[in-house]
Length: 190
Image (cartoon, rainbow, N blue to C red; front, side):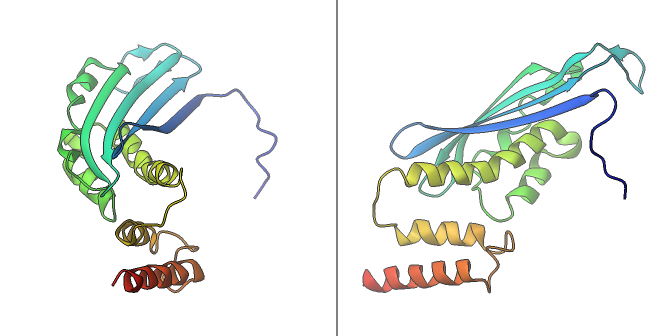
């Protein structure tokens, strides 16, 4: 394969997804995500018409997440810029994820509830990018102060991480050590 560096030609498009986590109260965090698509030249739509160069999609999702169980307590969607008026009809498509827990199977549940013709592919993509970032935000929130880890929280994170990548494979050292730690803390509490 030929090297693709240096990049040649003009830039056509960028997609930026940004996710941040904020403290809310003693038990919950806000996870906020933005998706922005920018085209650098006028575009001709396959369905007719043109789009000027500039922002095509600019979308924001805010989740209120309970730190005791990673339950999504509330969802807000804002659509500052969308390419078509019909896109605004999807503003409430993520309402069904309220009450879901961010855990294994989250992706398939979101796609079933808000994917395809029920919703907006861009909002679903943003929400799915936010889920692992919510775990990172949760970890940042929980680890601000040194404290003995709660075995139930540690167990929840263990089950979330298990087999998500090579480092967290079930038979790997990270997963085995964390499981031993959970088992020891559980025994110590008895």
